[in-house]
Length: 350
Image (cartoon, rainbow, N blue to C red; front, side, top):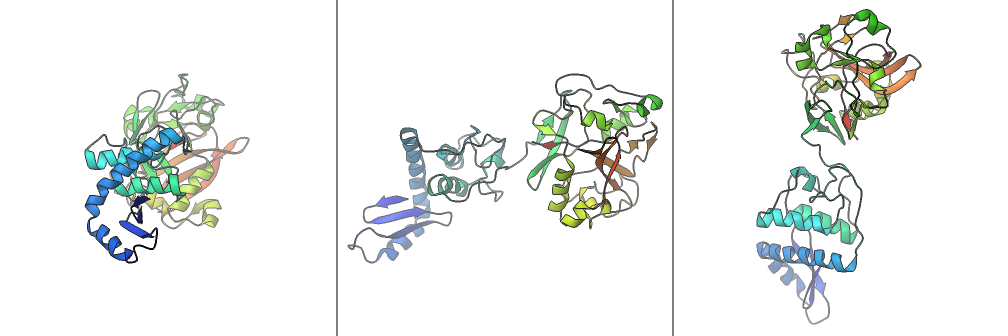
Protein backbone atom coordinates (compact mmCIF):
# COMPACT_ATOMS: atom_id res chain seq x y z
CA UNK A 1 0.00 0.00 0.00
CA UNK A 2 1.22 3.55 -0.84
CA UNK A 3 -0.12 6.82 0.57
CA UNK A 4 -0.15 9.69 -1.90
CA UNK A 5 -1.36 12.87 -0.23
CA UNK A 6 -5.10 12.23 0.29
CA UNK A 7 -5.28 8.86 -1.44
CA UNK A 8 -4.40 5.35 -0.34
CA UNK A 9 -3.07 3.41 -3.32
CA UNK A 10 -2.76 -0.35 -3.29
CA UNK A 11 -1.02 -2.66 -5.76
CA UNK A 12 -2.57 -5.70 -7.41
CA UNK A 13 -1.61 -7.95 -10.28
CA UNK A 14 -4.24 -6.21 -12.45
CA UNK A 15 -3.02 -2.70 -11.79
CA UNK A 16 -3.05 0.16 -9.34
CA UNK A 17 -6.16 1.25 -7.52
CA UNK A 18 -7.11 3.99 -5.13
CA UNK A 19 -8.97 2.85 -2.06
CA UNK A 20 -10.43 6.29 -1.58
CA UNK A 21 -9.71 9.63 0.05
CA UNK A 22 -8.19 9.69 3.49
CA UNK A 23 -10.29 12.72 4.31
CA UNK A 24 -13.31 14.47 2.89
CA UNK A 25 -11.39 16.98 0.75
CA UNK A 26 -11.37 14.66 -2.30
CA UNK A 27 -14.76 13.34 -3.27
CA UNK A 28 -14.06 12.23 -6.80
CA UNK A 29 -11.33 9.70 -6.13
CA UNK A 30 -12.52 7.30 -8.86
CA UNK A 31 -11.17 9.71 -11.48
CA UNK A 32 -7.79 9.55 -9.80
CA UNK A 33 -7.91 5.77 -9.86
CA UNK A 34 -8.60 5.74 -13.61
CA UNK A 35 -5.75 8.16 -14.19
CA UNK A 36 -3.33 5.91 -12.35
CA UNK A 37 -4.29 2.84 -14.36
CA UNK A 38 -3.73 4.74 -17.64
CA UNK A 39 -0.16 5.32 -16.52
CA UNK A 40 0.59 1.79 -15.31
CA UNK A 41 4.11 1.74 -16.71
CA UNK A 42 5.05 4.80 -14.70
CA UNK A 43 3.61 3.21 -11.59
CA UNK A 44 5.79 0.09 -12.10
CA UNK A 45 8.82 2.17 -11.22
CA UNK A 46 7.04 3.28 -8.05
CA UNK A 47 6.51 -0.42 -7.25
CA UNK A 48 10.23 -0.97 -7.58
CA UNK A 49 10.91 1.86 -5.18
CA UNK A 50 8.27 0.51 -2.84
CA UNK A 51 9.70 -2.99 -2.83
CA UNK A 52 13.21 -1.71 -2.18
CA UNK A 53 11.88 0.46 0.62
CA UNK A 54 10.17 -2.56 2.13
CA UNK A 55 13.43 -4.48 1.99
CA UNK A 56 15.12 -1.74 3.99
CA UNK A 57 12.18 -1.67 6.38
CA UNK A 58 12.49 -5.39 6.89
CA UNK A 59 16.12 -5.09 7.85
CA UNK A 60 15.37 -2.50 10.52
CA UNK A 61 12.06 -3.73 11.83
CA UNK A 62 12.79 -7.45 12.01
CA UNK A 63 9.60 -8.47 10.24
CA UNK A 64 8.76 -12.17 10.38
CA UNK A 65 9.86 -14.30 7.48
CA UNK A 66 8.66 -17.66 6.23
CA UNK A 67 11.49 -20.16 6.71
CA UNK A 68 10.57 -23.52 5.25
CA UNK A 69 13.99 -24.91 4.29
CA UNK A 70 12.57 -26.69 1.24
CA UNK A 71 14.49 -27.27 -1.97
CA UNK A 72 13.07 -25.12 -4.75
CA UNK A 73 10.46 -23.44 -2.57
CA UNK A 74 8.17 -21.45 -4.86
CA UNK A 75 9.05 -17.78 -4.66
CA UNK A 76 12.45 -18.26 -3.01
CA UNK A 77 14.06 -16.42 -5.91
CA UNK A 78 17.38 -15.78 -4.15
CA UNK A 79 17.56 -19.38 -2.84
CA UNK A 80 18.26 -18.45 0.78
CA UNK A 81 15.64 -20.92 2.11
CA UNK A 82 13.43 -18.04 3.25
CA UNK A 83 10.44 -16.43 1.62
CA UNK A 84 10.51 -12.69 2.22
CA UNK A 85 10.55 -9.29 0.55
CA UNK A 86 14.12 -9.84 -0.61
CA UNK A 87 12.76 -12.40 -3.07
CA UNK A 88 10.34 -9.83 -4.47
CA UNK A 89 13.20 -7.35 -4.90
CA UNK A 90 15.29 -10.06 -6.59
CA UNK A 91 12.51 -10.73 -9.11
CA UNK A 92 11.98 -7.01 -9.79
CA UNK A 93 15.71 -6.53 -10.28
CA UNK A 94 15.77 -9.37 -12.81
CA UNK A 95 12.63 -8.41 -14.72
CA UNK A 96 13.19 -4.65 -14.98
CA UNK A 97 16.91 -4.04 -14.50
CA UNK A 98 18.44 -7.17 -16.01
CA UNK A 99 19.82 -8.60 -12.79
CA UNK A 100 20.56 -12.25 -12.17
CA UNK A 101 17.73 -14.67 -12.90
CA UNK A 102 16.44 -17.15 -10.32
CA UNK A 103 18.19 -20.48 -10.79
CA UNK A 104 16.30 -22.50 -11.80
CA UNK A 105 14.02 -19.85 -13.28
CA UNK A 106 10.85 -21.62 -12.13
CA UNK A 107 11.82 -21.08 -8.50
CA UNK A 108 10.79 -17.44 -8.88
CA UNK A 109 7.34 -18.36 -10.18
CA UNK A 110 5.56 -17.71 -6.89
CA UNK A 111 2.04 -17.69 -8.34
CA UNK A 112 2.74 -20.83 -10.42
CA UNK A 113 1.39 -19.39 -13.68
CA UNK A 114 4.41 -20.59 -15.70
CA UNK A 115 5.65 -17.01 -16.23
CA UNK A 116 8.29 -15.07 -14.28
CA UNK A 117 7.22 -11.43 -14.02
CA UNK A 118 6.22 -8.62 -11.66
CA UNK A 119 3.08 -10.53 -10.71
CA UNK A 120 5.27 -12.96 -8.78
CA UNK A 121 6.82 -10.11 -6.79
CA UNK A 122 3.36 -8.73 -5.98
CA UNK A 123 2.23 -12.23 -4.96
CA UNK A 124 5.13 -12.51 -2.49
CA UNK A 125 4.48 -9.05 -1.03
CA UNK A 126 0.80 -9.87 -0.65
CA UNK A 127 1.67 -13.08 1.21
CA UNK A 128 4.40 -11.66 3.47
CA UNK A 129 2.73 -8.41 4.50
CA UNK A 130 -1.00 -8.88 3.99
CA UNK A 131 -1.41 -12.59 4.69
CA UNK A 132 -2.42 -13.54 1.17
CA UNK A 133 -2.12 -17.06 -0.25
CA UNK A 134 1.25 -18.73 0.19
CA UNK A 135 3.26 -19.92 -2.79
CA UNK A 136 3.26 -23.65 -3.34
CA UNK A 137 5.60 -25.59 -1.11
CA UNK A 138 7.18 -27.33 -4.08
CA UNK A 139 7.70 -25.29 -7.18
CA UNK A 140 9.85 -27.15 -9.66
CA UNK A 141 12.32 -29.93 -10.23
CA UNK A 142 16.00 -29.51 -10.85
CA UNK A 143 16.49 -30.40 -14.51
CA UNK A 144 18.85 -33.25 -13.66
CA UNK A 145 20.11 -35.28 -10.71
CA UNK A 146 23.41 -37.15 -10.36
CA UNK A 147 23.92 -40.41 -8.49
CA UNK A 148 26.99 -41.52 -6.54
CA UNK A 149 28.64 -42.99 -9.66
CA UNK A 150 28.20 -39.79 -11.65
CA UNK A 151 25.29 -40.98 -13.78
CA UNK A 152 23.07 -38.02 -14.68
CA UNK A 153 19.29 -38.46 -14.95
CA UNK A 154 16.71 -36.18 -16.52
CA UNK A 155 13.78 -35.31 -14.26
CA UNK A 156 10.14 -34.37 -14.64
CA UNK A 157 7.63 -32.69 -12.35
CA UNK A 158 4.31 -34.53 -12.24
CA UNK A 159 1.82 -32.83 -9.95
CA UNK A 160 3.60 -32.08 -6.69
CA UNK A 161 6.24 -34.76 -7.25
CA UNK A 162 9.61 -34.63 -8.97
CA UNK A 163 10.52 -37.93 -10.64
CA UNK A 164 13.51 -39.30 -12.48
CA UNK A 165 12.67 -39.77 -16.17
CA UNK A 166 15.15 -42.63 -16.41
CA UNK A 167 15.75 -45.93 -14.66
CA UNK A 168 18.43 -46.06 -12.00
CA UNK A 169 21.94 -47.27 -12.97
CA UNK A 170 23.95 -46.76 -9.78
CA UNK A 171 26.29 -49.46 -8.42
CA UNK A 172 26.96 -47.90 -5.00
CA UNK A 173 24.86 -46.94 -2.03
CA UNK A 174 24.75 -43.28 -1.10
CA UNK A 175 27.55 -43.69 1.46
CA UNK A 176 29.91 -45.14 -1.15
CA UNK A 177 29.57 -48.81 -0.25
CA UNK A 178 29.43 -51.01 -3.35
CA UNK A 179 26.21 -52.80 -4.25
CA UNK A 180 27.30 -56.25 -5.42
CA UNK A 181 26.79 -56.98 -9.10
CA UNK A 182 25.66 -60.59 -9.55
CA UNK A 183 25.73 -62.38 -12.91
CA UNK A 184 25.07 -65.99 -11.90
CA UNK A 185 21.37 -66.87 -11.84
CA UNK A 186 21.68 -69.45 -9.08
CA UNK A 187 23.51 -67.02 -6.83
CA UNK A 188 20.94 -64.33 -7.59
CA UNK A 189 18.06 -66.60 -6.60
CA UNK A 190 19.50 -67.24 -3.16
CA UNK A 191 20.33 -63.66 -2.20
CA UNK A 192 18.99 -62.05 0.97
CA UNK A 193 21.05 -58.87 0.57
CA UNK A 194 21.14 -56.12 -2.04
CA UNK A 195 22.40 -56.74 -5.57
CA UNK A 196 22.16 -55.41 -9.11
CA UNK A 197 22.60 -56.85 -12.59
CA UNK A 198 22.42 -55.79 -16.23
CA UNK A 199 19.60 -57.42 -18.18
CA UNK A 200 21.01 -60.59 -19.75
CA UNK A 201 24.36 -59.51 -18.25
CA UNK A 202 24.71 -57.12 -21.21
CA UNK A 203 25.89 -53.59 -20.46
CA UNK A 204 24.30 -52.34 -23.70
CA UNK A 205 20.86 -52.96 -22.19
CA UNK A 206 21.76 -50.84 -19.18
CA UNK A 207 22.63 -47.85 -21.35
CA UNK A 208 18.97 -47.69 -22.41
CA UNK A 209 16.93 -49.44 -19.74
CA UNK A 210 19.00 -48.94 -16.59
CA UNK A 211 20.05 -51.63 -14.15
CA UNK A 212 17.93 -54.21 -12.35
CA UNK A 213 17.88 -54.43 -8.52
CA UNK A 214 16.44 -56.86 -6.01
CA UNK A 215 14.26 -55.37 -3.29
CA UNK A 216 16.97 -55.91 -0.68
CA UNK A 217 18.99 -53.16 -2.38
CA UNK A 218 15.94 -50.90 -2.44
CA UNK A 219 15.34 -51.46 1.27
CA UNK A 220 18.96 -51.07 2.43
CA UNK A 221 19.44 -48.33 5.04
CA UNK A 222 22.50 -47.05 3.15
CA UNK A 223 20.10 -45.75 0.49
CA UNK A 224 20.24 -46.58 -3.19
CA UNK A 225 18.87 -43.18 -4.26
CA UNK A 226 20.94 -40.00 -4.63
CA UNK A 227 21.04 -37.58 -1.69
CA UNK A 228 17.74 -35.69 -1.48
CA UNK A 229 15.90 -38.47 -3.32
CA UNK A 230 14.35 -41.80 -2.39
CA UNK A 231 12.66 -44.85 -3.87
CA UNK A 232 8.93 -44.02 -3.91
CA UNK A 233 6.56 -45.81 -1.59
CA UNK A 234 3.38 -47.55 -2.67
CA UNK A 235 1.49 -44.46 -1.47
CA UNK A 236 3.65 -42.15 -3.59
CA UNK A 237 2.95 -44.30 -6.63
CA UNK A 238 -0.75 -43.96 -5.88
CA UNK A 239 -0.31 -40.19 -5.68
CA UNK A 240 1.21 -40.23 -9.15
CA UNK A 241 -1.56 -42.42 -10.54
CA UNK A 242 -4.34 -40.34 -9.02
CA UNK A 243 -2.79 -37.12 -10.31
CA UNK A 244 -3.13 -38.68 -13.76
CA UNK A 245 -6.82 -39.32 -13.13
CA UNK A 246 -7.06 -42.70 -11.42
CA UNK A 247 -9.75 -42.97 -8.77
CA UNK A 248 -8.88 -43.72 -5.16
CA UNK A 249 -10.72 -47.04 -5.42
CA UNK A 250 -8.69 -48.07 -8.46
CA UNK A 251 -5.45 -46.86 -6.88
CA UNK A 252 -6.09 -49.06 -3.84
CA UNK A 253 -7.00 -52.10 -5.96
CA UNK A 254 -4.78 -55.10 -6.65
CA UNK A 255 -3.84 -56.11 -10.20
CA UNK A 256 -4.40 -54.24 -13.45
CA UNK A 257 -6.36 -51.05 -12.90
CA UNK A 258 -7.00 -47.52 -14.10
CA UNK A 259 -8.25 -46.04 -17.34
CA UNK A 260 -5.24 -45.17 -19.44
CA UNK A 261 -2.84 -44.07 -16.69
CA UNK A 262 -0.32 -46.70 -17.77
CA UNK A 263 -0.31 -45.24 -21.27
CA UNK A 264 0.35 -41.80 -19.83
CA UNK A 265 3.49 -43.20 -18.20
CA UNK A 266 4.85 -45.27 -21.11
CA UNK A 267 7.23 -43.86 -23.68
CA UNK A 268 5.28 -43.51 -26.92
CA UNK A 269 6.09 -45.47 -30.06
CA UNK A 270 7.85 -48.77 -30.63
CA UNK A 271 11.52 -47.78 -30.69
CA UNK A 272 11.97 -49.40 -27.27
CA UNK A 273 8.56 -50.92 -26.62
CA UNK A 274 7.28 -54.03 -28.38
CA UNK A 275 4.41 -53.47 -30.79
CA UNK A 276 1.59 -52.42 -30.28
CA UNK A 277 2.46 -50.40 -27.13
CA UNK A 278 -1.23 -49.84 -26.54
CA UNK A 279 -2.36 -46.39 -25.42
CA UNK A 280 1.17 -45.07 -24.94
CA UNK A 281 1.27 -41.26 -25.01
CA UNK A 282 3.82 -40.40 -22.31
CA UNK A 283 1.68 -37.34 -21.61
CA UNK A 284 3.04 -37.31 -18.05
CA UNK A 285 6.66 -37.15 -19.19
CA UNK A 286 7.52 -40.17 -17.01
CA UNK A 287 8.94 -42.06 -20.03
CA UNK A 288 8.64 -45.61 -18.71
CA UNK A 289 10.85 -48.08 -20.60
CA UNK A 290 10.41 -51.88 -20.79
CA UNK A 291 13.55 -53.08 -19.05
CA UNK A 292 12.18 -56.53 -18.21
CA UNK A 293 13.11 -58.28 -14.98
CA UNK A 294 15.13 -61.06 -13.38
CA UNK A 295 12.94 -63.73 -11.86
CA UNK A 296 13.25 -65.30 -8.43
CA UNK A 297 14.99 -68.18 -10.22
CA UNK A 298 17.62 -65.92 -11.77
CA UNK A 299 16.21 -65.92 -15.32
CA UNK A 300 15.95 -62.77 -17.46
CA UNK A 301 12.49 -62.24 -18.97
CA UNK A 302 10.19 -59.74 -20.71
CA UNK A 303 12.52 -57.00 -21.93
CA UNK A 304 10.79 -54.80 -24.58
CA UNK A 305 7.31 -55.83 -23.38
CA UNK A 306 7.17 -55.09 -19.62
CA UNK A 307 8.38 -52.29 -17.39
CA UNK A 308 8.62 -53.32 -13.73
CA UNK A 309 9.27 -50.97 -10.82
CA UNK A 310 9.87 -51.60 -7.14
CA UNK A 311 8.28 -49.46 -4.48
CA UNK A 312 9.93 -49.03 -1.09
CA UNK A 313 6.92 -50.56 0.68
CA UNK A 314 7.14 -54.11 1.99
CA UNK A 315 4.01 -56.23 2.31
CA UNK A 316 5.01 -59.41 4.10
CA UNK A 317 8.28 -60.97 5.17
CA UNK A 318 9.16 -62.14 1.66
CA UNK A 319 7.28 -59.80 -0.71
CA UNK A 320 7.01 -56.08 -1.46
CA UNK A 321 4.72 -53.80 -3.48
CA UNK A 322 5.58 -53.06 -7.09
CA UNK A 323 4.17 -51.73 -10.38
CA UNK A 324 4.25 -52.99 -13.95
CA UNK A 325 3.34 -51.67 -17.38
CA UNK A 326 2.75 -53.83 -20.46
CA UNK A 327 2.98 -53.16 -24.19
CA UNK A 328 -0.49 -54.65 -24.69
CA UNK A 329 -2.47 -52.40 -22.31
CA UNK A 330 -2.75 -48.79 -21.16
CA UNK A 331 -3.48 -49.88 -17.58
CA UNK A 332 -0.98 -50.17 -14.74
CA UNK A 333 -0.65 -53.15 -12.39
CA UNK A 334 -0.20 -52.92 -8.63
CA UNK A 335 0.77 -56.10 -6.83
CA UNK A 336 3.40 -57.57 -4.53
CA UNK A 337 6.17 -59.92 -5.54
CA UNK A 338 9.15 -61.79 -4.13
CA UNK A 339 11.95 -59.61 -2.82
CA UNK A 340 14.68 -61.55 -4.63
CA UNK A 341 13.20 -60.61 -8.01
CA UNK A 342 15.08 -57.95 -9.98
CA UNK A 343 13.10 -54.91 -11.13
CA UNK A 344 13.88 -51.43 -12.40
CA UNK A 345 13.95 -48.53 -9.94
CA UNK A 346 12.80 -44.93 -10.30
CA UNK A 347 13.48 -42.30 -7.66
CA UNK A 348 11.42 -39.33 -6.49
CA UNK A 349 12.66 -36.17 -4.83
CA UNK A 350 12.31 -35.82 -1.04
